[in-house]
Length: 218
Image (cartoon, rainbow, N blue to C red; front, side, top):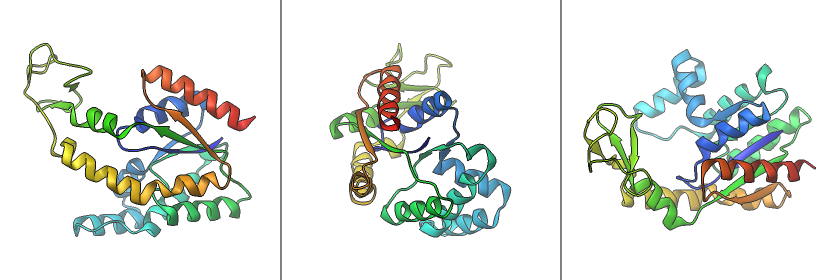
């Protein structure tokens, strides 16, 4: 299957993408991984991206599209892929259609993870990270440490990242609504969108997603 995963920040896209890709035996292609791989390998696209990033500018769509195109044409993606974070806007969605059309392919489904805005804010703004080890993550509501502000694992100080503040989260949501949400209507017009609730335990959301994708494929 060739799938695009969409949803607001805090919807759990990265977590679900990993599980779904494993269950479907297709590669998980995320924008973050594309950038890191191209930059670390020193590819021409990676060098271009790094130039913009160093200048504090947004990486142009054509660079992101080029990276995604190269990745989708690798051998392990011949049988399908799951795109996470791409396309991010209408221009990228239209470019993706053209890339696939050139190879006589098309998307099978666009999986939309739906989460109420207040829940998104609660999920992200409640995160607390250990200063000693950023892989030690707690939550003010859902995964509280035994002692407030102290990491259960190593005793390090827990803090809220600036990116996780409520103001920043709401700004990220505004960007999502203005730039990314329009691609849902674009794909709805093609009959590709399947929407599921991303509330509940991770395993429950994965089961919901797999059932929705199976219906879309039928």
